[in-house]
Image 1 (cartoon, one colour):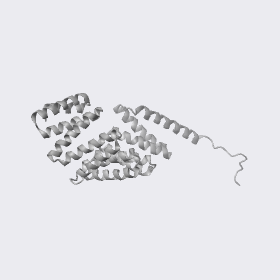
Image 2: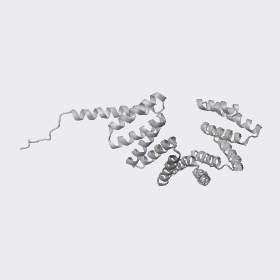
Image 3: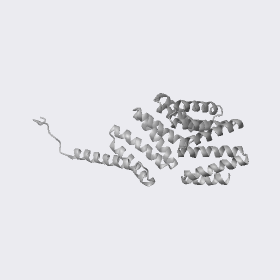
Image 4: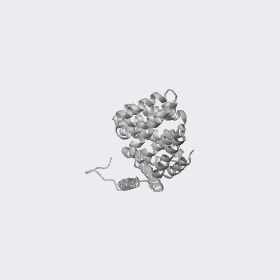
Length: 274
């Protein structure tokens, strides 16, 4: 790994995207000067990913297209497929769903023959999200199920956690509370296993929605109490809304307890039973 790439990775790990962007550009230039194709592919891919996070979509697309050109020449279907998925994501984020779908389907044609299940899991998940965005819930559910199968094949815990979470959210929006709860509980288990508390909190908010809809305020309270605990630990932006929901549930609970302890109300002209 070049000096520039090492510096870029350090800044990326620290969350300093601007410096990561600078050093990945340096890494790209180093690779061009040294005429090393593999290093150039890696540097361009990393630069494209950072540009995407910074919202520099034109530069992102240029990086990904150059990677495609290089790897089609090198006949590396794995990187070609992954890059096509990245281009599909870029177009989906921009709302260009037809173009996104074309990239995704081309990626399927590349990744399925080589059985690249890790990349396929991500691809099917992203296809599902695109189908949801275009109001195709049945197709989305089918893609989510395929994504889960691929994640299981390679033991991708994070892929399982994310897909169960997004699948559960989709089922919740369709009103299928039972299946949504099952998916979200699976997601929660995987996030806990990974130690990904912010992901766990996001799932707990959705579970709280389910329990509130059912009138199960005790379960909803437990979910939101845990979510607020995570919000505080990681300074998450959802804390204000979670605290408001929690306070409202506590108030409803007190009101319900007050009603249950009040004396019974007799009907007018009620007579004792003989």
